[in-house]
Length: 401
Image 1: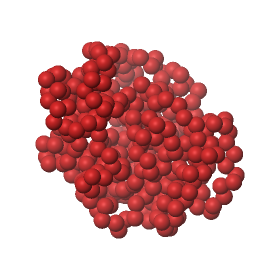
Image 2: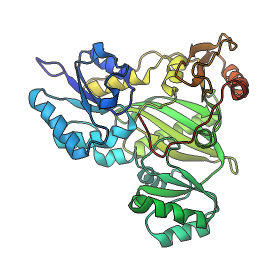
Image 3: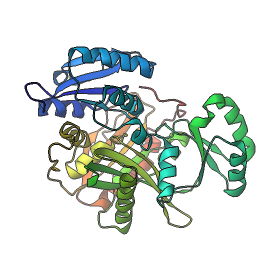
Image 4: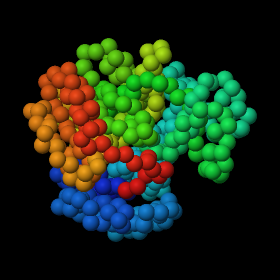
């Protein structure tokens, strides 16, 4: 902490999230500032943990953002700037570089935002990734489609989940999409679609060392549930399984080779049905969404938002010590619901530790000492949810707060 004044941390978020990060920063003794979008002025922020709030229009340019934060800095020092959401990471990196504040700069942050950058680096160091090509040179695209079997995925380089992705089955389908994209074509890549099971590893890292990581298995792949509808599930994998060791090893190599220094990460991997091989899909320097942090805390007692705040405030100057962990298993199931406030009272197993009450959603957080029990309940509930609640809506082209 700076002498004679509180350590000041500015949190930037275009989405309503990170409440525990804000609370923890305040509990540590920080002065906490929050910069968010105007439409979230009345959102459920932990106002007793925030010293000052600032509001910005949604379409603020980077230059305007730098000017606004520089104005704030005239009257108070800022020691750290943190993006609570992935979509704010590049802007926050630009702020750090302009104000010369420690933290991940633009070059490194590209490895954790830009799917082309992370794939190219992974491929360079021998980490398996699906075949890909940047959407730049048309001859290179034609060569790729002639060489790599269809289908392919047209992916935005800097989006999350399945937002903006298109599945392409033959070359003639690609060109109309590129015509629509116009000058935005170069912000996409084309990638081989590899059928398989999708996993995620969520980590805490300090001074380039992964000090904590847990491997999980999605039910249906997230791309499938976002584009075709369905029930989202994920669960902790049995910690003694061979696939967990493989996932943790690949995850560690990914973070090391991409130069991750400290904080929390959410990485996704695919195990191909055809050859059983694991492929790296993507990694983000953030807490996983879709209640993944709740699954982690239920299973292990580790709250990723809390640990991230401790790491940011310490920033390598104070030794980081992971809190004691538990070794239970957890899972989450959630889906869009036809009902505004779905009645879930018919689901009464003792493993339900939290009921999701979000508008037009149904879901539970589950916890058990046995991974088999979590898997059994998620399989059973997925079938019941389809009959009892499931609703579908098109995946958005752009994220919304």
